Length: 420
Image (cartoon, rainbow, N blue to C red; front, side, top):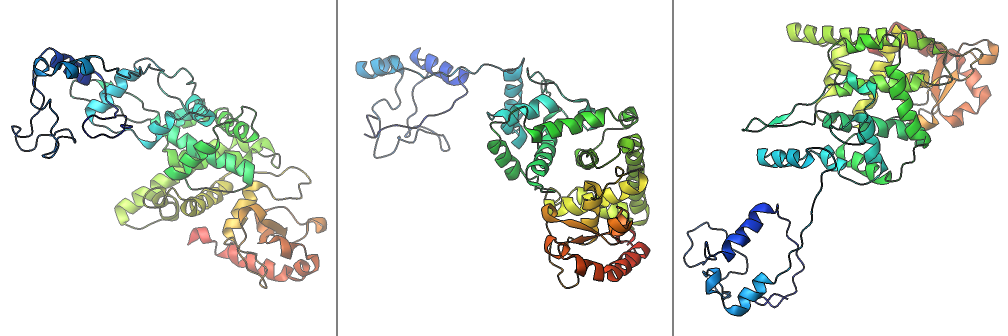
């Protein structure tokens, strides 16, 4: 209980240690008196219990001037000291430099301090300088590193991978949600990522969702001509995100692995198209499809929401599909995940039965063969339309709608949305 306020003190103050302890030592050595509100200049910060109505008896006194009981109470006061050891070399020094430079911790740096298996999962595979668990995947050589923070004395706080960890957390969350719930995209906002960290405190190494994430990273790094990607300047995280998700979709038993031979070349060509579109806009102020539908939505308000990510990825998928040799396995009756997503986006995520037209989420989306598979219809984008499960169950109705579906696909082939 505080002697002056007569209240139970339960507040713990967090201090950095050295300066406060030194101040106590200097006071005991009579180097300065305690503050006196009546004598301090305006603007001086004083303890909250120093009011005009309540003046502690030690106001304005040096240690030697205190009453014997107050001296004993001060010298006999136990101090709770928490020693913080560094988990990695120079971690304490780097944190001190950050504090002195006035640079606040980012949201991802705060997540790095959270307990739980997903925290370790992100640090291990995306990397953190000096961390004992850090063993970053080759995949992350593709993406940009962050900059160091420099203080006046010329010292650097170096953690160029903090944004890479944030990127990987969002990518891993997206792939894991695809595995667990079939959801195509989730928001990549800080609140969503925070909730995912908390929901995956216990993440086992054999978790199928986590295994799927690591399979994608390793597969990209082992693609033919991967070195051609490394030879170029690093890729923005937002662009690498879409490339990784494409590989995740192609890494399905539905496809012949021949796609691996051409995916790097197709991606390089897509990047060239992006660069040309940027230059075209810069010189003419006119937006080509690559600029309007992919470059612009990469940044700005809402760029980290599923609502913006989804159409951006739809454009990316469509362009990459045109540049690649993607083959379904022999006798494959069902559309693969890439074709399904392209058709789902192409058809506006609505059932194409004119008598229905309801919104269909990705998990329940059914792709109907316009010319039935049993009648020799091919499992290709040009022979598929999005149908809700209820309508698709009525085979007779689907057969009756064949001419309408064919006309729809014919018109679309003449005026594809990607050319608008």
